[in-house]
Every structure is written in structure tokens, then in C-alpha cells.
Amino acid sequence: MPVMQTLRQRLRAETAEDHARLDAMMSRHDLTTPQGLTAYLQINYLALTCLKPVMTGHMDLPAPRLLLPEIRQDLSALGAPLPRWEDQPDPGEPHPLGLIYVIAGSSLGARFLYLQWKATENTVVQTAGNYLSSLKAESDWNLFLRHASGLDADEAEVLQIMKSARVGFTIFSSACALLDRGLLE
Image (cartoon, rainbow, N blue to C red):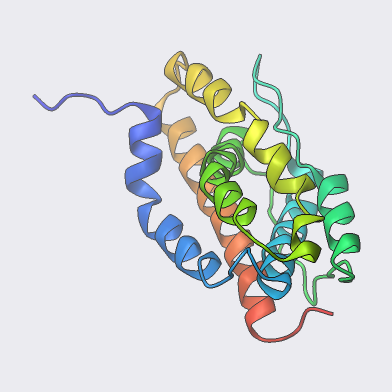
């Protein structure tokens, strides 16, 4: 009889393609250059502003901080405008844990990105580290893991969580695509 997968294992397995696609899109941006850091920040700003209205906590798990003020400060330091959606995606009514998985997971990955950014010798880029420095310090991932490990969810709820995680990845990917089409201001 197969061992039951944890929620984290299912999320990882069932959203692996979505995650890999987003990672490939995001990795095109060199965070040690003004252009690359601007693109990274604008993508995050677009995605997070889209998700903010539907971002909530779940039971005793608080919603992750979205750090939009930090992104605004960094874009200002880079002399870059705040981006706007051409046609903002509708996130629907997602399950909070699916979105928290995506956002908290990005803060885990930010530790690597922070080190990449920190290695820059570009003085303009050095002044725009509020977002990455704050992400690096966040413990949202550990909070998510503790919450998910104790969650008693039926299959219908687990499927809602999976669908919501895919919505989160899709919104970030849509922001990347908008940037790639040159439609950001």
C-alpha cells in the first residue's frame, strides 16, 4: 500500500511543471544589473498586487507579508516606474494555502537570489536591496511547513489548494510574459 504523501510533497509534485516554467522565466534576469533587477522587481510587483486582494491567512497561519512598499522603494532607487497590468488576471477565490505555498516558497528561494544581488559591484543596484533583504529574513516558509504538516484536509480541499497554487504560479508567469512582450512601462 503506498505511503500517503504530505501536502507539501503533493504540492511540490503536482506543481513541478508550473514551478519549473516560472523559474526558467525568472532566471533570465541578472539581479546584479539595473535592467535585470528592475525586471525582477516589476514582475514581483505585478504578481503581488494582483494577489493582494485575495491573500489571506488560513486558520492560525497568517498571510505572508507581500513587501510591496519595499518593491516600490527599490524601483524608485533604480529610477524605474511602477508597472501596471495591461489586462490583469483574475485570481478567482483561491484557497489561501495554495497562494501561501507559492509566496512563502519564493521567500525561501530568495536566499539564493539575495546572494546573487549582494555580489553586485553596481552602486545603483546596491541601493535597491530592500525587497531581497526583507525576503531573505522572512520565515513564512517555516510557518507554512508547520501549518501544512498539521492540516487535516479532505481530498476536495487538497485539490482546491493545488489549483490555487497553480493560479499563483500562473499569475507570476503572466507578469513575466508581460515583461517579455515589452509591455511594461
